[in-house]
Length: 109
Image 1 (tube, rainbow, N blue to C red):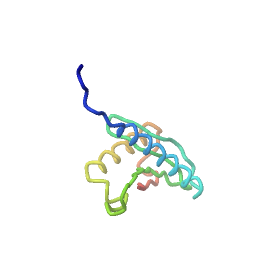
Image 2 (image 1 turned 90 degrees about the horizontal axis):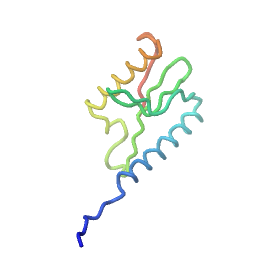
Image 3 (image 1 turned 90 degrees about the vertical axis):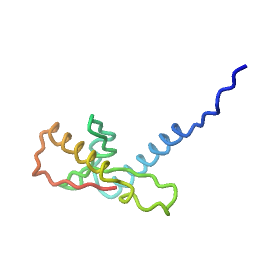
Image 4 (image 1 turned 60 degrees about the horizontal axis):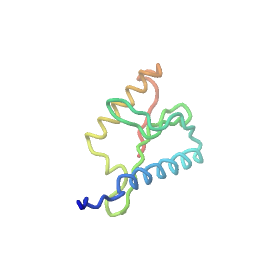
């Protein structure tokens, strides 16, 4: 009999935790008066977890789940490479929806 190595359910657990965090973030944003426009917007360039409107401002939200507050805040966990992907995906969204660079935007984490 061949024994296979133990396989952890970590990727599924991580995906489930991520979805739970995104749901909580959407609920929080809605309670703060933002209107959720789109979730999990994917391009070849990257993904944006939540796109919302805060008045006239389009908000691109990156949801970060931190298991230990000692690891730092959400914003500190987004490195330059991830920032570039988020910006690229946001530019793609603006082009796809016909919005211009004049559209007020911000990135939240």
